[in-house]
Length: 35
Image 1 (cartoon, rainbow, N blue to C red):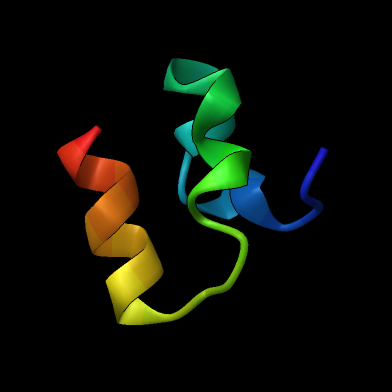
Image 2 (tube, rainbow, N blue to C red):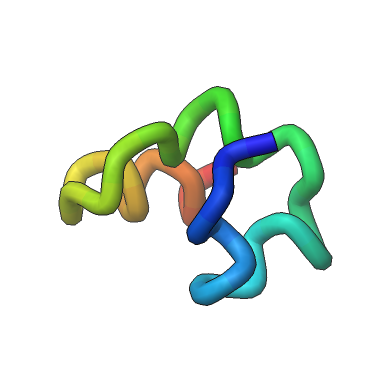
């Protein structure tokens, strides 16, 4: 499920964040944090 997402710790708190933060772009990270 989205390798490399663990670096941000999204997988631990938001397992479904992979759908939003597909890329490492700032926009993707912002969208992920908003949710």
